[in-house]
Image: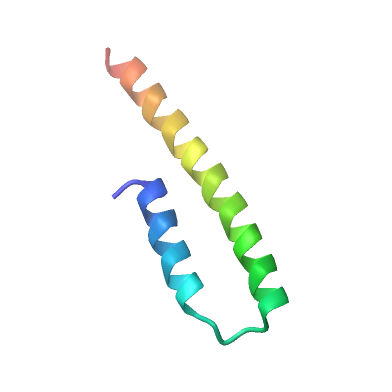
Length: 55
């Protein structure tokens, strides 16, 4: 499972948790989205480097 897939799964789980107030929840989701985007970009960069190294 790639980091991107893990991030998507994490977002789905956290969006399902509606116990926090809406404003806090929106802030948390924004931070999570940014984190997931950064992690996905980093994971794809490492994957590309590994492909380049093995070629």
